[in-house]
Length: 490
Image (cartoon, rainbow, N blue to C red; front, side, top):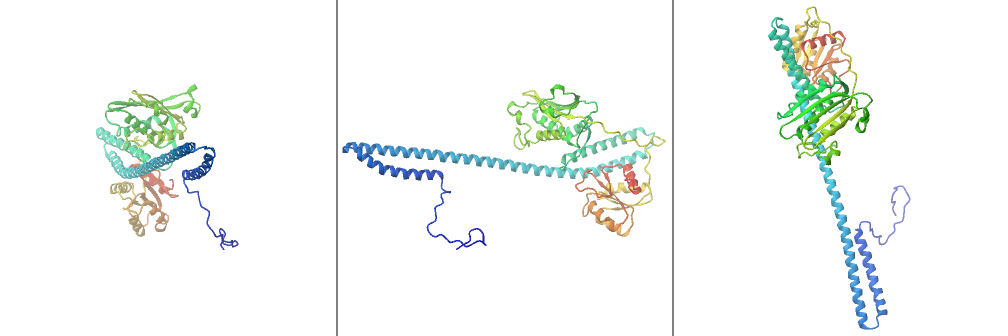
């Protein structure tokens, strides 16, 4: 007795005897052959009786038996031929399916390797940008102090220092672009002045384009603005320019142009998604080999590339297409084999943001010196140059300054000294700035906090009630921000 399914069910009698054969695992071809052999045996026995009834003499019987034998041989040969073709067809289909599965697996493995590579590059770019921001902070602060100490009549020296400041500010923009390229989280949309952004991106672009290729700008969008994620327009221009670079063999030219135009009746196909009214057109043209007609329908497919293995990922144009679609735009292209390709990016226009109110200037025409104070400020920074600069600037404005190299050293100082404000970097060894801020209320009740980072979009949100300052900053910006936090304005 046994319970087949339900352990609490009634006992069922066990049926003893020979179990029924399970034919589900038998090859279909073998089942057909077995059935045919049974039918053949029946045919042989039955045909012998038929032949014996028709044969009048021994010679006729012999001829009929020979005919019956050949008929059986032909029937068996046909069966073997049919089963062999069936088996070969089955094996070919299985082999083709296995090849497709292996190709799909190799593609997935390549995608995983590419994703891991991009993640590694992103982390490396973020680390390089963080260290570079520290260097730019020191340069900006020292240049500003040097400029403040120069005689207004020393025009040549002042021009040199101002040029140093402009170069540093330009480098700060390049670092922000590097952070935007490496960022993996969602990007908030913002208003972008297209011509100005393309000019800034071109400086970074020239680092990736060989000198044999001329990069020409033809920007005539009349200070047009569009709304998209910060850094996304840079990525679009970079991907299109790199694609153009790879299409050029030898000397050539890449032209980036902008126009504001009205598509009018031509708003069909991809342009049908654009809103009514004028739109912005960005064109990236090259003098390369062009796009063959056979692959034009696939150039925006992810991981599709005609480049040799290891040269391209097949993601550049796919990312351009997805980014522009997300921004409410469209992408088209014109290409002539042997003469080059032009990609057209259409984006909806947005209203320019309101201009910020300018800070009042002093009577002498120079910017007003930020107000100082007598409060106690703790500066927590692992980079010696930045730490010394911040302490020097704040002491110059009258504050009593304590310094620490990381969060643990800051906690030790907080246990011995009361402070009014803690100015801390985000990324530090042993204990970072966010962990320090979590433990701050227990060590310095009532102390305010100012968090500093080289990335305006932190992986962990800035704690409530904590002010934020992005690197690189100038001495004037640091002094102003500290005063605002202490006064409760920020």
